[in-house]
Every structure is written in C-alpha cells, then in structure tokens.
Image (tube, rainbow, N blue to C red; front, side):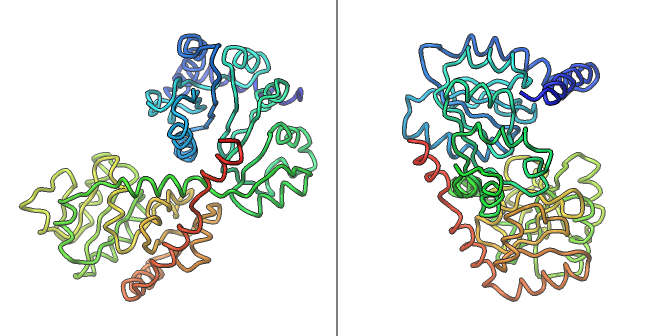
Length: 404
C-alpha cells in the first residue's frame, strides 16, 4: 500500500483525535470509531455471513437505501452490516431497523482493515458513490470478497485520471465491478483500463420514487392552496429568498411555501419581515386560518418531500452559494424546477436543463421571466416526469448483476 497514503491516513486520524477535544462532530466520529470494535463483537455472529454496505453520510445512505431494502425484502434472512464515515449519517441512522448492526468505519489503516474483516464474516461488500478507502479495498481483494461500488460518478478532474494517480487507479482495480451513473464515467474508466463497469444509473431515482409513493396527505396544505397555483421553495438560503419574495410580493394570484434550509428563529423571523402578504408558519396552521394566508414558512423537518407534491413549480435553494440541494425530491412529482446559477456539478440538474424541465436563474429579471413563462406553459412538467421515468430501475439492475 502506498507509503504517502498511509502517512496521510495516520495524520488524518491524529487530526480528528485533536479536533475531538473542541469540536463536537469530530468528537462523535473519534469516540464512535473506537466503539466500532465493541459493536462488531456484540452485534455480529462470526458463524453467519454479512452483506456489508458502507456509506459516507446521510445522503449516500439514502442513495444506497433502495438496494439495501430491496435485498432485505427479497431475502429477509440476509444479514446486513451498515457502516458510516460521518457523524451526520451515523447519528441519524444508528437505530435503522433494516440492518443487523450499524457502526462507524474505523480510520483506513492496514491494521484496522485486517481487524475489521477478521471480526465480521463478509459475504459481499457494497460501497456507495464516492467511498474509496485503499487499505480496506486492498484487504477485501486479498480475501477474495466480492466488492462493488454503486451509483458512482467520475470526473476527469479526479486523481484517478491524473499522471500521478497510479496508486488511486489500483484502488479501482480492487472492485469486482463498478456500477456508474453515466456514460461519461464509463468512458473515463475505460480510458485507464478499468473495464468491469456497468452504466446502471443512479439509485436515488428509485429512492425518491419510493418516497413519493409514501408521501403524506397534508390536509392543511390542501386547505391553504384553495385552488390557486403554488410555488414550493425548498432548502432556501437568504439569496434565494430575497428574489422569490420580491417576485411573490408583486403577485396576487399565486401562493408560496418556503422551506428554508435553516429553520432557526432568527432566519424565519427575517423571512416573515420581508413578506407583504398574510403568512403563517406551518406550526401555526389550523383549519380556521389555513385558507386565509398566501404564504407558509415550513418550520419543521421531515415534510418537504411530501409538500412538493402540491407544487405547480418547485424552486431548489443553494444555487447562489456552494451548489443546489436535492432536485430529485421535487422532480419525482413531474413539475418544472428552478434554481440558481451554481448547478454544473449536479448531473441530474444538467440533464433536467437539457430535457427542458429545469431552469437556472441568475438574478431577479431571469427569475421573473422563467416563473411567468412556467405559469403559462403547463406542459413543461411532462418533460420532468418522463426524465424521472427513464432513470428508474438502477436498483433492480444492480441486484441482478451481483447475484440477488
């Protein structure tokens, strides 16, 4: 295993240990990683074989979830181990009921990899999207354990495709098979002599489709809408809200639901101060007031995916910052989607633009022009619905390919 890689891993482990003294997230990661060995001793049985799913954080968990749950549904007796790298995933899903054990992935040293794989009898290992840990992959290969990565996506800027990337290319050769999202990833891997690759698509489409079929009816939202057109703005930041509220304040025949990315008191109060129409927080809605307001601010977590079903147009926040948030939660309902300028790194956003169902705006004028046109043209959502439909099925493709 590459000397520089191992040195960097050891340094990284020490940095987490140091940061754990004053950073809560680092503390959870550091302590949780040490507790992994106890969890594996107590929660797993060496006489049984486990399918190991590894994800980085909560987003990757949701990406791998359709495969995990379909596997458990088809073969209820299958034992499953789930590991996380990030506390933001582990702390939310440590009690996830569809697996037999959940723990942190230890720091990727050769010693930890050998100990981990000696404690658990792994039948197959499945990594999700971006997880490349050299020592674990090397040890899995040494033990002839079938190892896969799913919903992976590759870009030419990554180290695998650089002159100095020979060590990272060796990591890729540890996988029994790679299931990638798109043809560009397939071509990039082929260019470095990685051939055990299938373009299977993105399992997130299956996940959001499942969520949509389980979406809650929200009677108070239905009462609020009262037959009018609705914009649902999800995961918004201040720069998104300023444009949307300016537009909304000048419209008398539409309604809007804002689900801010941050729902702390000061942010919600700021949104309310900018609105020039009757509005309420979601927690204040009742039978006798829902129809009397024009805007709702969602002040709780967990309902946005269900709220999107009531939208005529969805706006996804984050595009005026680091990048847009989840577009597929809205796209699954077959509605036009609008976002800010920073979306180029998000494959589904680029594809939605290409099919005519997604729209990027850069300022108030472009937002106004796009929204006005979308309220007139009711056919745009059909393009989004067709796009989602064409991308379903990755889960079944992968399950079949890996022998289930």
